[in-house]
Image 1 (tube, rainbow, N blue to C red):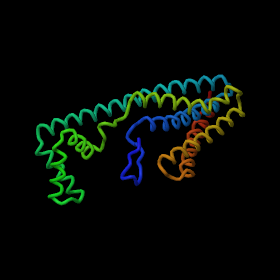
Image 2 (tube, rainbow, N blue to C red; image 1 turned 90 degrees about the vertical axis):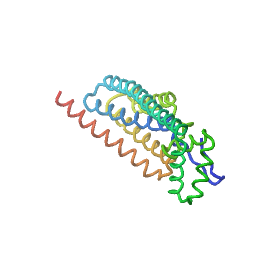
Image 3 (cartoon, helix red, strand yellow; image 1 turned 120 degrees about the vertical axis):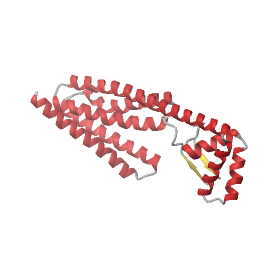
Image 4 (tube, rainbow, N blue to C red; image 1 turned 60 degrees about the horizontal axis):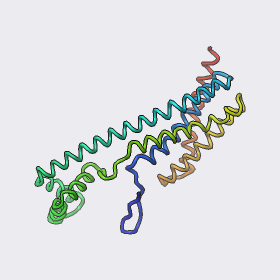
Length: 235
């Protein structure tokens, strides 16, 4: 949800993890599976092996991404909740020390000593407001808007699967050199599209961001294809 400041401008929500997990899930699925597919294709001309490898990479990668996203975000939320609870107890047990902390923070922000004390005492007069302000100022997070682990995990699973299935489509329709080039074309096009989407989030140059995505994906594909070719020849 965007936050508006005096009607002048808005900010995107950059703390929640669902959108981030979806965008990066597609990118990870695409890069990892197109690289895997081309690596196997470099080792063997049998399309069945490529299909099995691609499907295995899709399933294993999607499950791994979802589990990792869930566990990491869950651990982060538990850490935030623990620190918020510690802050709550400190506000209850040491209000004078916590007020002094706020005064110091506001003075560093440019308020006079009198102004800082007045604002800090006003904030500390309401325990809920005090907890919210201390958490934001000291930890840099909004305790009411932490990420949702399950939503991020689901988004990551389906996003990774979508990205991973794209370069695999040609191998369900054919095999050999034609399928390889089709996977390369799909991978490059999808990587560029992901770059454009990321550029909209970050407000950076879509051309540069798309080029970066394509270069990263291309480097991974070239490396795995060469390794696969060398392994196939040696075998």
